[in-house]
Image (cartoon, rainbow, N blue to C red; front, top):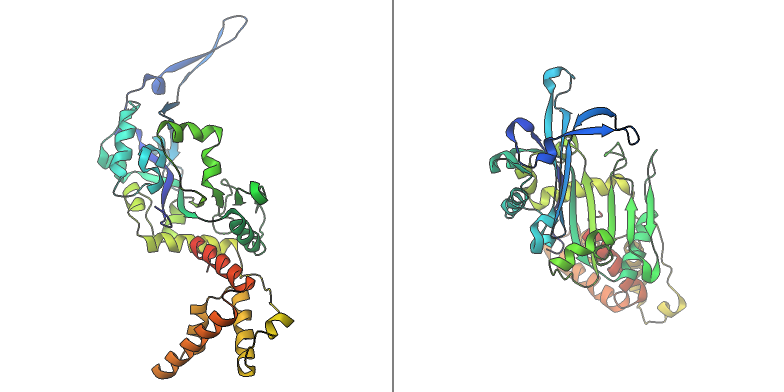
Length: 357
């Protein structure tokens, strides 16, 4: 679903007491043996299993998890940690995980015959490391230019990280910070990448081939991570599976906006000077100042709508209509079809998709 925010992946935690282990590998004693002597060095319980079905992976692990703050014995319990992701939807992969298709995800997990738990246990389970995604289309050069512009405003903190992948025809995206960064407040994880290029990577291509999934041309993805329960609560969400996938678009959009504000400052200042060619366009003297103001505002990231709202704020309805129309006429006559106007529209379209604002 293009330009819709949804869950791409999450780490689900379920108390083992609510789980039936089916795959014996997950609960088997494993001996560590000295290769030359055959001596048994120790015996440990296998705590992890991994399967791949039609290019779709399922990873389960059993770990002791501290569920309380005080570290007392009763706040630590054995939990099943399950990695859940949108590939479990097969042909509906691009939809992301939503309340409408969550049951399909559960059915796939059950079909793997690794573990069993009730659907209600699954929906009530706690989550961490949630990746929210948004897919959109765009020309590679436009995306690269917009992201280079945005990167100029990247806010650097201790431990912050930014990396550009490729350039020109080989450009595949930008990454901001690392997934394991400790602070979601100052160094949240976000990346923009070519989904077409990503689908051709060795670890992913089998899934797309086996399931006959064809991606739209020039498909790009924005992805950001909600790290833990505190991060989700700060964005108006509870960290259970069902509540997360049921979060409305406006709630997810606020979470993304907070992420972007932590990553980037205001747009870079680039004042566009009118050239001699511009001055020969026949702009009436009374319009020169207004056009220059519009160019300046656009160079700071404004759109025509924002300019109209700014100029007409507090006016009477009649004057508001008059000046709204005047700004539109000036924009269409002197800015819209210029290189600056076209580039600004492309840049602002991409920034708008990514939730910059």
